[in-house]
Length: 162
Image (cartoon, rainbow, N blue to C red):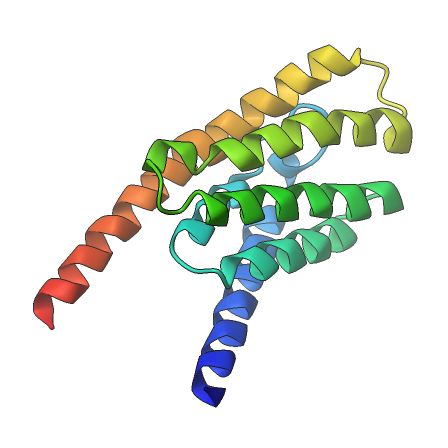
């Protein structure tokens, strides 16, 4: 039982660290109203492990803090990632193409309001929903699904060898 808790915490910490690193390395693309946050590809990980849910939340929280995000962005941006990760985990046994949908929708619906009220971005909310949604489709839908299939293939090969 203790080993499972340690493994869970270690996985969550590694995912959080990876999220932070990817966000910071790709910082020019990770912030503002037109963004493709490469680290959002990791939102596919709850399909493999529940440790990804807190890992992604903490990673997003830390990345937003380190990236100098406004307080509402730190709070609501991180909550958008948490909501997306949680519902990806809930959909883990469904068709894999559904896995990126929760983070795409949660960010698309929440982040434009953060951009408007925390940063005063003058774009119309529906337009920001499209720009944020487009970035999320690229990061979660395209990069996330590529990651999903690489991990699924690796998982099958690992279990074949045992």
